[in-house]
Length: 125
Image (tube, rainbow, N blue to C red):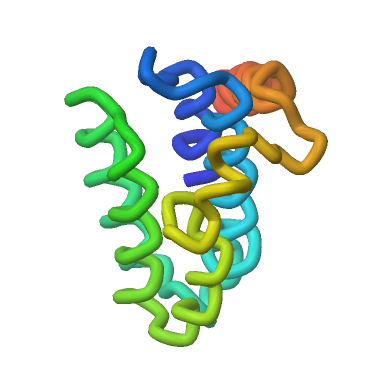
């Protein structure tokens, strides 16, 4: 799942700036790090299924709605993740940060580098 989320760094829609996309990636990564990496939070079977659908969605073309879908799926699998809605990058209460591209110090190039390294490590396995 980590590599799949990181792969979004290479899929930025043209209407979204690099900083805005990095903002969304930053928060999606944090959502996954806080909930998806703990099998007692989001059960492994649920995470595997979420990743399968996420890959299909990526193959069909990405947009900002993908992040809402991802948030909804984590919350469905682990309802306590709903408290992470405060950091949903597409939420109205985060619009100003999104529009300014407040990416937390990790520009899109950072996420692209992380993706390349993760994909290379996976290929070696």
